[in-house]
Image (cartoon, rainbow, N blue to C red; front, side):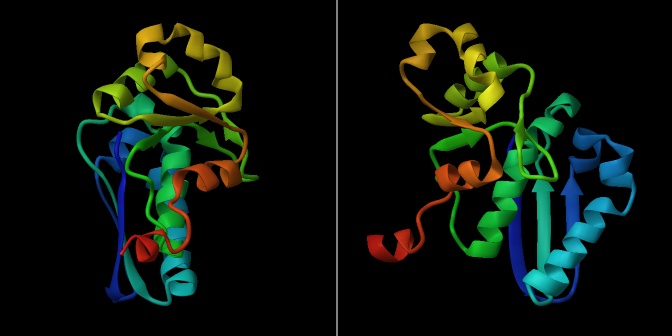
Length: 169
């Protein structure tokens, strides 16, 4: 499942589009003001009135929603810090309010999908470490796996270093 997030010029609004309601499916997350409150805070406080647009493209399935917690947090952190997400990396894991990364189901299928998409690295929850044994050896041998127990670890692994684009120019 991919997540697209972008900021725009000041308009004091936030927007969530496409499949997010169907994918996350949780009334607490989507149908209540929870996500809207988070976006409103980001727009008003952190982004000083700039537009925030989160888009979950079609193609994801509802059971994937909670596993995208680290992806959503990483996308928002990327927007706020201006540090792009590494283009070769995928990630999966639920996130607690305390920033812990929780295990997910279906790791084998998620790794196979990341491989099929051309990704070479995957960040996965610490408690899913032993589920890698279910991934075929020929796939495991062509990919690099990073184990994360906290959002801090995920962000360190997923985001390009500060100034990486400036240094490349």
